[in-house]
Image (cartoon, rainbow over all chains, first blue to last red; front, side):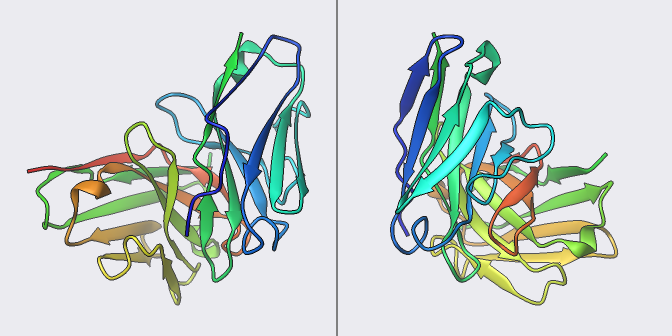
Length: 110
Length: 119
């Protein structure tokens, strides 16, 4: 199975909002409401930001929000802060107990 | 606190084997399914395998099917990944991660262990 498609990079100034897209197919993103998003700082393990398309684990700021339309999911980061500069990965359930990840998006805070 | 710690990585020649371990602490390990996810240097995340909470079922990415075997010892709170017939393209940091959605998403990650396959 091919990886989900994410833009390689995104950027925004402090205080602005930025959206990162994640495009899959009718077999994964479009088929299930099981899209999750992860933040990874250099040399660190990924951390869960969003699960089941829109839900935030406790401790994740509400500046992070998720959505989905058809085969494309999106992560929006509002009120950008310097510490938001990181790599972001989407993931989707793909059936048969398989997960699929996106290629990652490097977010730069200008 | 809840923690996953991987070990067993290193440098290995193509065609050889390696076994990774993931020790869990601060959580009821036997209640959760577990995944292995890898990340090649400078690349994105790639799902490798998932095992049910009781070890009764395992699922693999096509890229490792027939070469890798996931297992667990709930009495030792430890997850394993036996990697045989290693290839250069298996070079990556290997993370273990806790499943929270019946194979649908993960919430807790270890810090990873680096496997380098090189002659």
